[in-house]
Image (spheres, one colour):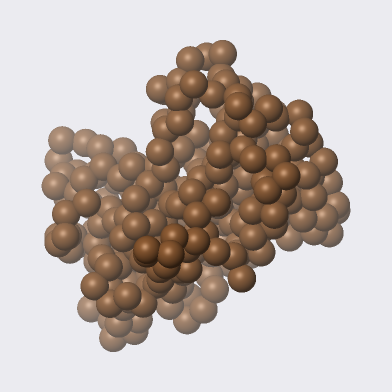
Length: 271
């Protein structure tokens, strides 16, 4: 990734609420905006507004590249004042976009079982990954999706990937749809059916979910790439405000915005 990224001005095409505090925003950007790899993110800021001063990191959910412009979609959840500003944006409003940033998912060949695990809004970076895998991998490869949310109406984005997956297993905390309980309990129940030498896992979700996955895979060592969330400032690795601890004694800290947001699950020191 280049050290310096150009700041692009985009125009909001739509900004629709899908469920409580969950939105999908479509943005038109100049043709010079590069295509984002699955798992990369952008820093988004409402243009000409004093708050928030710093952009918010959001994964690229979908992208359509044209000759005169690019269109991207952002699937996001309102978690505070900053993302609350995004929820107020209307068609025609301007935003500033820095990116695409970070390191995305890596394609692992030679595996015929791919397991995708999403917790809540973690479905967002996995969706372009599914599209990419379907284009690049043989038809004999199976994609199994595990998707967990607090309740059924918060399972946003499911329709975009359902048809591409061989199986879809749902977990909700309140039992309003599928398995009642954390999605990791559902994964643990099925884990033995996935041979480590034939399987690769891609996951994105809250810290607790990823930490639990690391514990499960100690006993069943399947390669696993995870997209992690962390508060950011600059987004390009200069401020060191988004570091996570790793097991590498030579480099005990990595920047989520620069070396991530996708990491090998086994490399992270979970606390």
